[in-house]
Length: 102
Picture 1: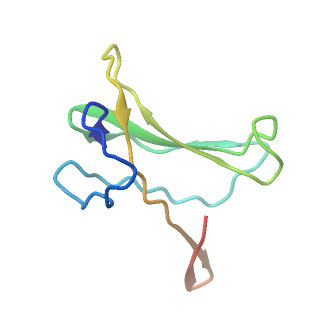
Picture 2 (picture 1 turned 30 degrees about the horizontal axis):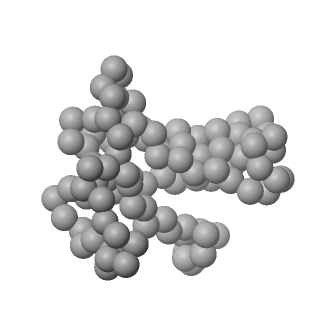
């Protein structure tokens, strides 16, 4: 996460992982119509509370597609942040784990 006032040009190389980086992970068993939303536990970063939000509401996107959002629960703080995400999906079936493209 980088404050929005520190903008990069599109041609700049990707930023290296620094002290301003954090990792949020979630284990997802399944998303169903009965439980279509998953929210990660809070991860504190730079004094703010961050969560991953995953939804499979069919009114929001075509059936079978998912929405992944990064939420900041700043409770009264008003700041604009820009986040660069490296999203990876690992699927485990039995004792075999594979990485799948998103």
